[in-house]
Image 1 (tube, chains in turn cyan, orange):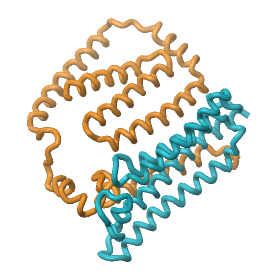
Image 2 (cartoon, chains in turn purple, brown; image 1 turned 180 degrees about the vertical axis):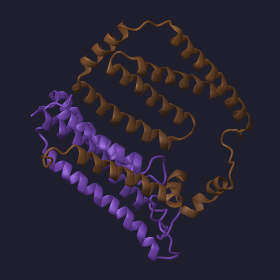
Image 3 (cartoon, chains in turn cyan, purple; image 1 turned 45 degrees about the vertical axis):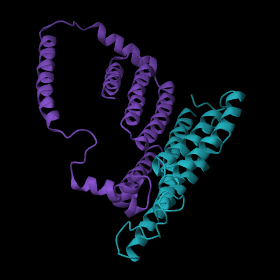
Image 4 (tube, each protein chain N blue to C red; image 1 turned 90 degrees about the vertical axis):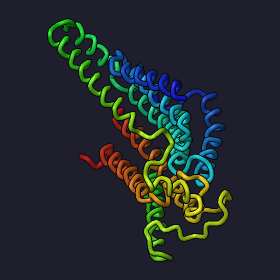
Length: 148
Length: 185
């Protein structure tokens, strides 16, 4: 299914156009996680879906998959590190609780509100998206190396 | 709503049972997809759009990966093996009767206790514990988040979210370790 040269030119063009919209939708779900249904996990899965779509359409020899895999795993590790660090900052500010909501909460329903929760959402979203994409790329690269 | 949910659940059970007995791996996978997408509609009917979004995206991604794996695997060999196995069996014998009887007796037994237990449950949507009503009442004010699920997930139960992220991280590390060919020699 995942071939070297990818699918037909029509599929390639459509996937170029659609994947940007999927990516934007993932970002919307992550950023509005504290207002509308969704959040870090759902949005991150949508983000990884946009990348997987591109790899499926364009095949494996166009993209430099090994570098992509390394970058994705580095981004994933950084995101989870930022998540834990933001939680640890709560230990030193205010009432000294892990996962303390230390930023001002603002007005409920505004885009910039709810303190640290949107930042947690963004970190978890990047982490989930990079993790799912890394797993997919690892499987694709394994198949490429086996078939050689 | 309960009638729709029951029909959907029966449909999902049929899909799951068909997946066990399918001759072809690809049709088994598609009938597994019935279970997943039926669950999405169940979540939507039960007013849980957060879970529905996660389920539909993850289901699609896993289906794509598994279809790719099956199309590359030895699908024909498996089918021949199953056909070969079924040729040598006689269906009606003492063991068959004993198995069916055991299943029927156990099903009736569990149905009885399930019926007993379901009568004592609170109606759907009521809060049984004190914690639940406190969460629903004060979460918007305490966390400042308009979406209660995110408020609970990242403030009251943030440890669970950290554990979930750690599980995903560990899964990635495991996959990268197992699927590494260079450096294993």
